[in-house]
Image (cartoon, helix red, strand yellow):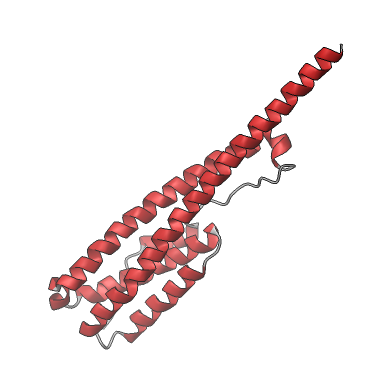
Length: 185
């Protein structure tokens, strides 16, 4: 009888240890994925001043576009949560569309090597941001699923694990992003 109780207790303890370790692994993966996103967003934010300076040289009278880009960049760098970052990133993408629309109006600028190089770097960074977002959301999905399924859901809250927020675009932001940017001279 005592042996049976010890065996059952040992199996339960072992089960909790396995659940805890799997939750920790998933939690670390989500943290790593979030770090990847912040690195790519920072990289993009660091490219923008160079791009803005290049475009500014050609389009001195487009002051409002440059101010909007600067404000959006600051908001993006100040975001702390995936929700804040997603909102700031979407606003930033809109301002970049405006910046590129201004650049389209200056044929000499489009032929400028610095501009082309910066635009290529920005395109590469955008691709990396999208990949990082997918990795983060996949990792968050795996962790959230693990936290919500039985029997892990019983212990996850007690062990301090919380569901993670996805990095996603709201419906209002999606509608805004889908509209073409309008630039008037």
